[in-house]
Image 1 (cartoon, rainbow, N blue to C red):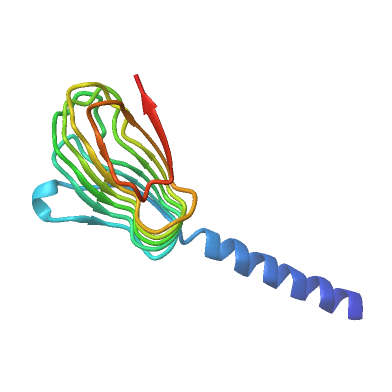
Image 2 (cartoon, rainbow, N blue to C red):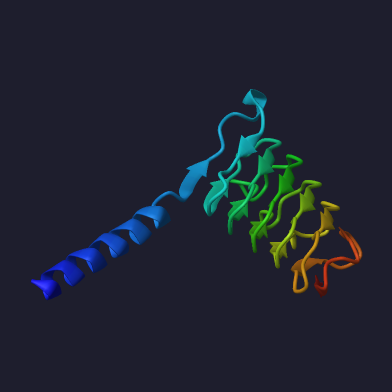
Length: 150
């Protein structure tokens, strides 16, 4: 009987933990004209539109991709929020984006070619990493690990 109760209790704990993981959201932002796209206070996977987006990841370890199209030409504002976020700007996009990582050790990739001058502020963190276009993008000194790309 004791083993059955222990096994049942363990199953409840496992299900509760798995249920918490299921609360993370994965979604595409809607029409930018309807206002900012906001994540939750849990881990999110957020994809921007091919228009000019304002995306706020909020708390949690988020994955944010600001552009749905490689050549959308729209200017985005992306704020990761608390947590070790991954923030991407579309490859080969002809746009000028503003990225703020927020607290946490963020991974930010704004390497999108020589035509869009992006601005990146990594925010508080000890191991932020940013990949950017050498001589084009503006990277704040608080981005501890900077990787300029040709």
